[in-house]
Length: 406
Image (cartoon, rainbow, N blue to C red; front, side, top):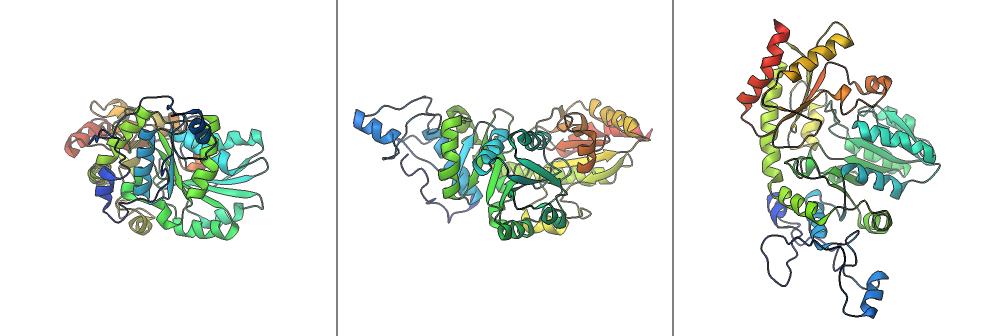
């Protein structure tokens, strides 16, 4: 592909400018909006050019499973925002995680993963044991546990920060130092913050993962994922894998994600402000036992949050009390069921606020022991705060919370 991994010519400009301008590659028609190339293959001028393209001897597009102009524009723009040398887009966030694992690991290797990750991510690393890749799960915020879990076979650290759903914050500089000293690749899922609020590569991460389905799209329309890092890793290890295995982002979805990136910064800051408003209100509500939000002064990693993130983000989790786990679940479900405005769904990152009960949905397939280790109790509720007027959201939540106080 022509200059597929070329340096970003806008790298010195502000994030907001790069979010709407980076990666643009106009065709001969001079279109202003990014073009949508809905084609499976590309035509060559002659047989010699076809042979050279297929043999990677000359740049250019070959087949949309691994090279498409619309997808390329999305990859280049996201790489600019994450300050990465290169990016590969994938069909979903989970396919990005799997592709990264397949590029880095082989039978006999070992992974250290935070125990507070998305439920499907936890399951994926557990499943890898059938291919003789083993995983140890540790406390995200305890660097001593990470160090103790390392073996001579450890090849990868994997984590989310903030974590899903408790908003714990990892010390990226400390973990990157530990990983670098042992020759381990540090992979960070940046889904909750997006590059608008956090750029893990600037804090020592080697690879960044995105479920672009979430905040990068921002309106719950499509699926997508991305892997970002050094050019040698992306071009030399991930791209050949994607070419042969096919977890490919479609051109249409890439076009939607390009439009999402244009408003990412504006949305993230507005949704974070709404989340802080709700977190403060919930923190003082008599029916709420505890609030998990990095923007609160009471958050245990508040100082670290300020160093690594531009704000606390748009996810607020909170616990309601109860006499036992069964009672806690009933009370949590009651709060959720009383909402009329907020959407009951497991997705997040939407402009519409969503609510879910992690123990029975996003993390419901984990064992009870794994949920307990991750701190996910039956009374926990996760809110992904959108762009609605905060007072309307408070009123919608209070309908259920007030009943718990009666």
